[in-house]
Length: 359
Image (cartoon, rainbow, N blue to C red; front, side, top):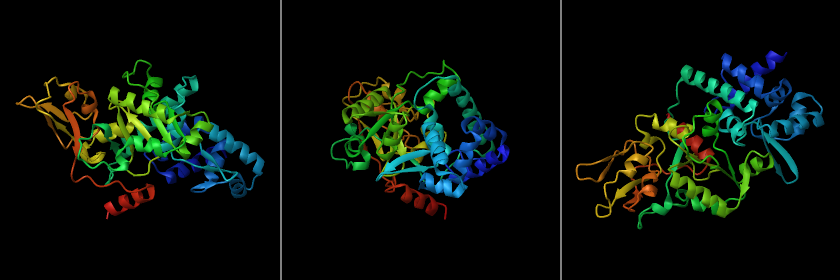
């Protein structure tokens, strides 16, 4: 019976999709038997698509509502399901592994023996799945980079969805947690530390409220959120989110550990995979050919030309603005890059764009 519930969980996680869906390989079962108790796995299997109440899940299972509600609360505390209160009613949802369950495990930034075991098992599953099915290459960008809008050259059109400050102003609450990617790497090897700030993973609105309630991340003020963005930009991290105008998270990514950025940079043309819609412009009079921008560029998109001005490889440039924020002589501004598709309005629009792109 116990083995059967985990086999059903494999089907459940396959249906939820995401970057690492359920797959019938040994590494999946090694992982989920540590993540989920048999009771939690059974509840997860009974959860319908979308959100539902404990009563709805209990009815589907033919079990007592109080008992199921206790299990769901336990799962939410462990980051195995999503939970939110709406109009006095508590709802639950079953997330995929990524984005979702995997991130929730490490965003608290803790370093327990269980954390280390989960890091090892999650890493093994991701490695095995990548080896078996390969790294996905979507026909339409699933994620996007958001440029450093304060570095956009005057006269260029800057949409609201291009401005991190606008998202900070729009949403409440806002939470900040530990970077899942860098923390997982450190749990696997405490010496694997690129030196980038870790408390920079941001959530907005409903997702932030869930994470705050469950202690996965902490609530910050708008001023503190802007400071997180400033620290990230100065360090050379890249603002990444879903390729939608409405967003609920921003990862401040490094090129050495973070899944969104690493996956994009592994593509033949990263500049078409996660582009912000901007590219750098260089002021010949201000540039001192120090090559700071070349060294900072996470995409290896810059070289110093014969005239001692940086030259951009647009196939690789993702328009992040890291070159501009690090320029000691303020010789770099970001300008609009033609030909980059406008992000769909929301996840529903993104799903439609992905479907249309494969026709």
